[in-house]
Image 1 (cartoon, one colour):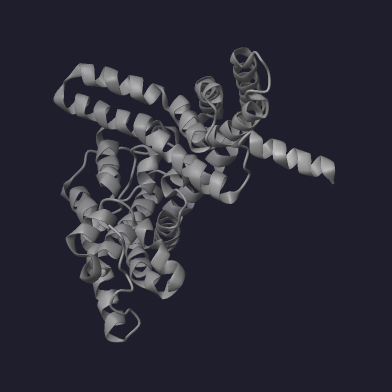
Image 2 (cartoon, helix red, strand yellow):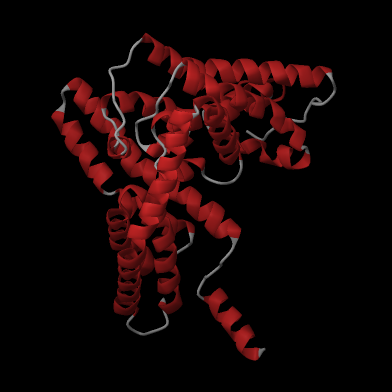
Length: 361
């Protein structure tokens, strides 16, 4: 009993907390931030360079995308409140995990960064030579874990993601509904839909369906709650995050219906009518209209297809009028129309009351 208590005290002293909130929400969300600040922004810069002929932008973009493994790992470490020497050591760990994880690199980085942070925190500031011991333990543990675990983790994520994309090609209507509804819901929950899509490498039609679901929730909630939140709430949710509605949804889950209806309608319209493909970085599939990252990802995928899209053999065609119309309709018009219509019906039936969708913005 005393030993258990002593161990708990030691874990607390070292800042080691194993909980869903810390790992499943904070760390996973931080991984998406690391992806955004490296792979995603680098791809956008590279695409601008290719379209404008400014080659120095291609160089900048390549440096940004090249640091993706380190960026993800350091972001995770920061979210886990890793001590300085642990945090700095994650640069090497992240690069190793992302490289060895192949197409499933983001998931490999997530798992292995957790292991490395745990190992580093166990020894952090426990010896007079912390400068040597902590980085040594963090890097050797992390890289060893990457060597052993990253390839199988990468393969599992890759196979699972490929299965989803294959199923979407075979059954675009049904899978359009399922992917749109599920990923859109994940986006609104305090979990990272961007990290989920990145971990599975979702591109192509499946990436388009995920994009549709995220847009449905963000724009759907923004429009449905306009009566309460006006222009500030419209922008906060439509260009920020629908997660702002979580306190209201926890109290009254029925409020989810307008956004969910928009996702169910939007998904198959994306996969069947417009055949919209998201072949930019997989993270873009799970971003929706947040910072316009989703639409930008679809567009950059036409001109600079991501490594994930190339690896699964996606055929990249020059965009036509229907493609641009699809980005606009799936990203904004359909979610707004369905979200508004369903919410108005629910208000008239007394299912949504004034103030139910009020957020702090």
